[in-house]
Image 1 (cartoon, rainbow, N blue to C red):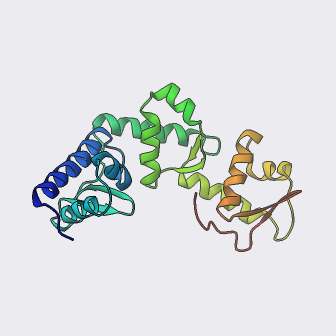
Image 2 (cartoon, helix red, strand yellow; image 1 turned 45 degrees about the vertical axis):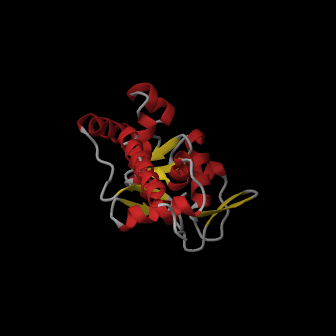
Image 3 (tube, rainbow, N blue to C red; image 1 turned 135 degrees about the horizontal axis):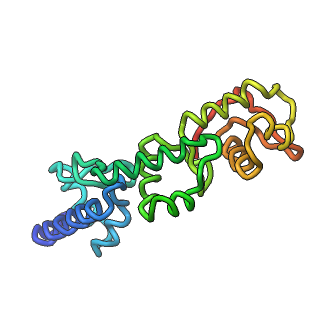
Length: 205
């Protein structure tokens, strides 16, 4: 299908500006959702897709799944952001099996903490165990290792027994066990949990 070159070029400029503005204002995000670009550009259907395709062909932008960003661009931390990232990782590692909640990190480190935590999760430096709590990958591996090495196959363990194995309070135990259920480490039963066949983490949520 043929489009008016003037309209198409104007739409391309709009799309590129939307993307550049987003990464400038949200430098820790991996880019902007393509659907958000479509809606913000005020154009629908094939014409917006053609404009995006032309920008990709000319190496102005790149698409990664549902995310679009300037070609060659990636999040980079400035000095202040690096200090915040280091502070978050340090706080979470101080008591690695009972890390602070996101709300506690906000209280101690400021309102920029949640965006940085999401950045660190995408970078593989944190694991989201529940909506409000993140662990270091090393802590998750240690705790999962305790379950794998201690739990007998096919035997059902109560929360109290699992609390003894992991050595954490119930506040931390239940969300971690739910994480283990989702990631394929444990299988939940009515009376407790069984170590899953293979005991491996299939997919982190």
